[in-house]
Length: 363
Ligand code: NAD
Ligand code: IPM
Ligand code: MN
Image (cartoon, rainbow, N blue to C red; front, top):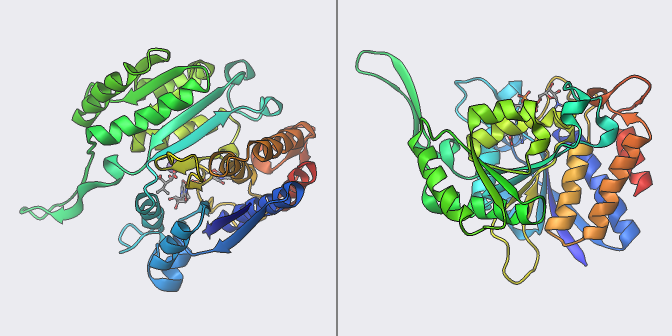
């Protein structure tokens, strides 16, 4: 089979980790006899610099004409002036919306070899294996109006709108329950229903969906408490379903259970095709452009490499190939290879290229 993958390196460490992902895809192609045709397009800050637009129409079209997208990261200090007229992050939000990718699957799994890379005690992180299912095309990141204005008395004010309709909530919850059915059959729905109207709708709909999955255990947890439980009893979570904002925040927090932002992959998906064909998705590490380490060759590529594994399994149905990539990552960690973000005593510190090479060798 031949698969068309659009690479969107973006900014900061984005190009470094996407190069690693592409190398792994090539290695999988050689080993298993697939052809991955890869082409690159612009998004984010680099797209602003080159075209004035964080998401050129051409990029969106190239993504649409392919089978899957591998994204690095967008953004950085160069484009972060709060007064700037356009921002790199608009490119990413536009991609997700434009491609209809409403569900972002963020697995948080501790590789046993990394138990001491987490700042949390080993006995707390032991056995962590959860999935955050984050709503990705609604909520306060997309609600209108969103604006800054000057009030009649001359004060600047700004507002955002947190809006969800029942269909957006229901389809996200269905994804969460379907994933839970292939795991430990528990869904934690996260909201702030004690304060927000949008969260009360979320909870109402969550209960309606839960009733359709009597074989799955369901619970509601308020987002502030959830942030705390993630530190206190993270191994107790299976699937966490959350809106766009809450899922964003909780997943960065949860990354530390796995040792580093550099370990967290994700898949952004739309509706699953009924005919069982290619399920289009965008695969993106959870981390950002990491301006503090960009260009140094020390970024951890494993989040992106694990995102490639998700692509192989979810979009292309290549389970054996995905397993091979994940096993190679696990083996590299067992063999002691560590980028600086997950380094601990007695381990072998390496940069992005060496880590990627070590994974490729084990595929
Ligand atoms: P960040 O995730 O880029 O970095 C946070 C910290 O984690 C930094 O110390 C960084 O060095 C470290 N880190 C992140 N990824 C790493 C990796 N692969 N290996 C080793 N260390 C890693 O978050 P930030 O600094 O808050 O954001 C920087 C920029 O990235 C902002 O412009 C933000 O909007 C953007 N961002 C983009 C995405 C995306 O494109 N998907 C996601 C998050 C943030
Ligand atoms: C993420 C990022 C993005 C988000 C930003 C860069 C738009 O934080 O992918 O988690 O908020 O979704
Ligand atoms: Mn984020």
